[in-house]
Length: 122
Length: 111
Figure 1 (cartoon, chains in turn blue, green):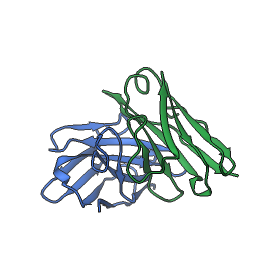
Figure 2: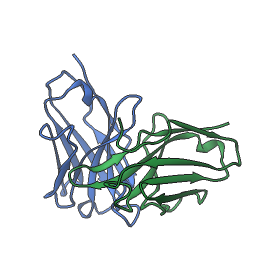
Figure 3: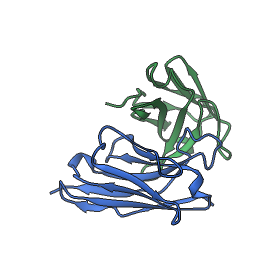
Figure 4: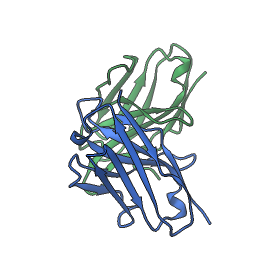
């Protein structure tokens, strides 16, 4: 069974940092692109970042570029999101999602974790 | 403001069909056949329902179908059931430097 489990969320003051993790199981993790998507309370979904299968290619939404860093450890089947200089508007549930694991196309977010809540407030 | 435009809400009676539209631009929906749709219940993670405009993942009911014309994609749910009541989001690949854009979501109410 394909499974993604996020952790690392919590409360942080504006300007602070947090690192999210996403543990993957049930598939050959190193072969697939991985992504982070967030959802502010009562709002819609927003793509945050993607990383290629080897970790060498990374992509970011303009809203987080320069502040967030996506990475992966294929030996630990784990995805990370290092979040620095956090702002109130970063408050959201953060989901990790895979591409191309459950369906043949990697142009969709085909499996999602349960999400981890990040609250940025003073 | 979301990059893709969806109606805030739609409704239908059990057994009826409904269609949710998703309007983008010729830089996203119109440029790529990489539109996907997600179902989300309150407090739960999204679930992929349609990918590559028309494809359905294994296990998703064939009552769900997708289509696209120019810059507008659509999700149709036929034979509405109470369990279909949820929020639905469209998503499109948009190439560099935007990459992925989502719609604002549509709340489906089954009357």
